[in-house]
Length: 326
Image (cartoon, rainbow, N blue to C red; front, top):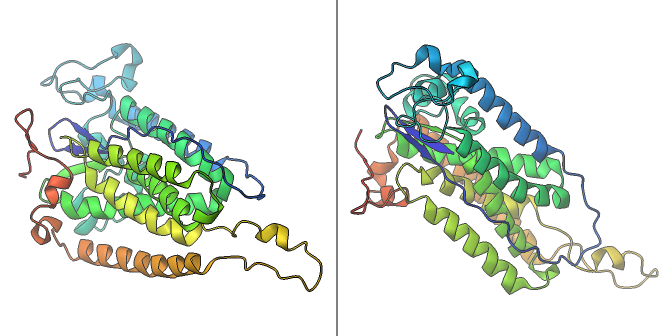
């Protein structure tokens, strides 16, 4: 996802995800055919093309930031690199197309922006990085769990990322766009899926270590300037909780035990800890979204409740400033 400051360069919600090593799952469950993830990729690319068409740089560029880039593309050409280094549209166009802006969501009755923003991207680099990450993450999950559960996690994680982002956006007057919150939700779901289905995995420690390192690296990228890490964190928390609810599987040997002779002892389908995780996570999900939405539409500023939280999205150094003022 990207976060565009008014009049400033795009803040890309960077996603440097690398595909984790595949680890063996000891189960005889059949694999699903992945079609939802490719459709989401196509939809995101199509929306970006439409956004560039609406942007129409040759007509709308004032020339103050320089000339349009790749003018041979006509009205699909990009804003000057000084304005948008990701090869994309202007902040005004992204706002028009549904970019996330706190004031419009809370006071303009435009809550639809919480979902619309996850289909928008700040530039070619942004959309390519996110869609490649989605392919690596999403196809594996969809093949194992089907399009319904993966689709629910993707959309609700995107919403969770937008809610947390909006709670900390208002004091910066930013516009936020991108699918990174939803993508981090899938990463979070991968982690909770590994934990709740722990007994059916081989090479457990290696799989857990690899996944945790990948998640840590991606979240660490979010502390760079022009990156809105709150959407990453909100999406990750949402996906992590939803994974316990939607992605738990029968314990190893349950499918085979159903074919035993009558009177033989059959394993229970799920372990007790899986059910406990599911109930606790479901309750947490309800509280997470309820509290977040209530705070958002009451106009609460997350920065007032957490004076240090802005460091989660940007850590100032001698090489850059975070520009935390309006």
